[in-house]
Length: 118
Image (cartoon, rainbow, N blue to C red; front, side, top):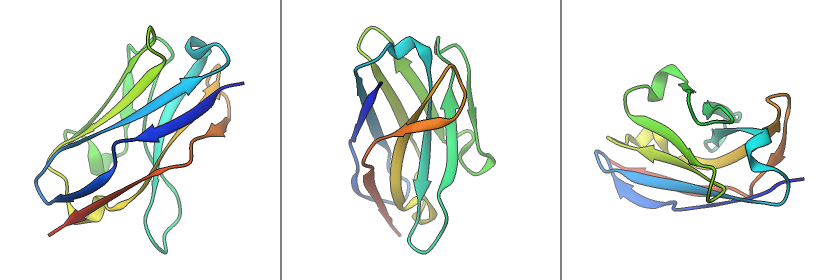
């Protein structure tokens, strides 16, 4: 089974950009659809977007479309979340999660904190 580790979070100002990374180990990486979720203080975990096993297609929740881009490098077992034009409401702990053959997201990283100041 796959293990996931996120990195790249931090404190930025509104309008800045940040790239999060999700490093996978174990398992067959190309067998997993990978998603990014986030959880803000006092709120439920929210789906941000996901990317297909080949990396050929990504989908996003409406609030991040045109600002966030998910990509993956299967040769390196890595998934990235490029976040541009960040807003204070993007402040959250960001998690990557993997779903074997696109079924349930049963594998989760520990999360990385993103804080956007106004």
